[in-house]
Image (cartoon, rainbow, N blue to C red):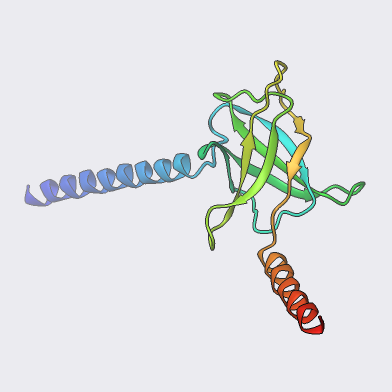
Length: 159
């Protein structure tokens, strides 16, 4: 009788462990979705530079996450970088909205900041954000600053 009792307890504990493991797998799968499990729509925007931006980067309005970057690709006609953005249905963007690639901090990653416009017409699914501002390259800015200071100091020495 003791052997049957132990066998039942072991079977019950094994089934319990499998159910708990399945719960963890389900939780990991649903929380691993990057917003696509929610209802929303996609829009695209073209940029001259997308340095530091990657698939999965946040899309924010006034600092609040409203979506994410789905794809990044090159437009073969214009050679600009095209970003496809997923936007939650809770936010409807006017057609004259703008998008800018901004830094989270001095050494942080990049995200797309949306600035809603004032137009009464709204962007539809697969719409295009026409007004964009590309990523600022920190090295280029530093070089311009350093070399402009160097040029200023040399021109003052010559005077």
